[in-house]
Amino acid sequence: MNDIKKVVLAYSGGLDTSVILKWLQDTYQCEVVTFTADLGQGEELEPARAKALQLGIKPEQIFIDDLREEFVRDFVFPMFRANTVYEGEYLLGTSIARPLIAKRLIEIVNETGADAICHGATGKGNDQVRFELGAYALKPDVKVIAPWREWDLLSREKLLAYAETHGIPIDMKHRQGGSPYSMDANLLHISYEGRHLEDPNAEAEEDMWRWTVSPEKAPDQAEYIELTYAKGDVVAINGVGMRAHEVLAKLNEIGGKHGIGRLDLVENRYVGMKSRGCYETPGGTILLKAHRAIESITLDREVAHLKDDLMPRYASLIYNGYWWAPERVALQTLIDHTQQHVNGTVRLKLYKGNVIVSGRDSKTDSLFDSTIATFEDDAGAYDQKDAGGFIKLNALRMRIAAKLDARRK
Image 1 (spheres, rainbow, N blue to C red):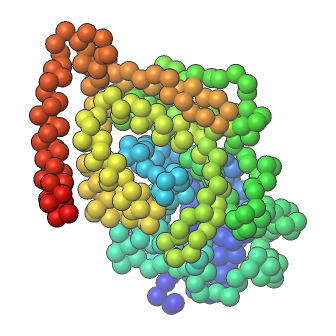
Image 2 (image 1 turned 30 degrees about the vertical axis):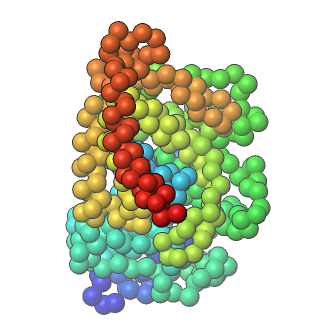
């Protein structure tokens, strides 16, 4: 422990990380640098600065960074170019934030001359893997401190008692029991786990949801929106140009109003257990639907199918913490190459929890040829006779096998 003189702590200002801050000072006798990321979680972050100061952290050792644009532009949007979904449903809202946090932790280590990083992920979860794989990929010799794998403060009651004993400020919400859920929020989603949700047969309580209304309470009038794409990314909504993080924030607002993006999922965690969680991802749900729609007219058939084949692997790499691994980078290079001509507009109808594609167009890159696809007279654009030889060639192996089976009988 004596070789660790300075640690960069991923710090939220909440109960867990405030206890960790004090525990680091007492256990490792080290200087602590705090890092708090603004990923669009919608919470006031300045209280984290005030609490860090109160716990003895020097002002110059407190980092509170607005990472919203980098998060969406360099992590969320590249993921959606691949139409990424984990286990058929999950849009990876927590997973995709971790490599950016790991990247910034390592940058601060380099800036401050720290010896180690520290995170508050529990030993049961996936985040410990994501943080640490990212850190080791970016700084192979960095030391990692994971208190939940070292201490015996393995319950909320023990954390509260430690905080009381060491004079750590405790928010009233923690004294009164706090939220019944373990929550993670950023611009892509909010996740809810724990307490009531630990019974996979218990329906999520309606007052749990924060970003979305229930479909029953959504407007009775559908809303149409138009998204403009350039190289696979949304650059405008209803003709208004926006930065990446503004796009996602606006889609969250619109989608939440229509009850879009709720998910109740039992997922297979990297560490081997099944875990039930609920998620709100209104903007991401809209993006996934719209991106597939614009690709449907701008991507070659076999390229689209190849992307679909690769997507589950890509999703697993993100879920399991391999964002910085060479295989993810290689896949991203391929995916981004396929997006060079994914340009145009998609019109969507939003209604009571549903995202319905009502139109798609690309003036410059559409592969849809109405003169060939028409059911009317195509004036010779397509020769139906060509299909006969194609079908017979593809049936040849089955015809040979069928004849052999008949002789065997």
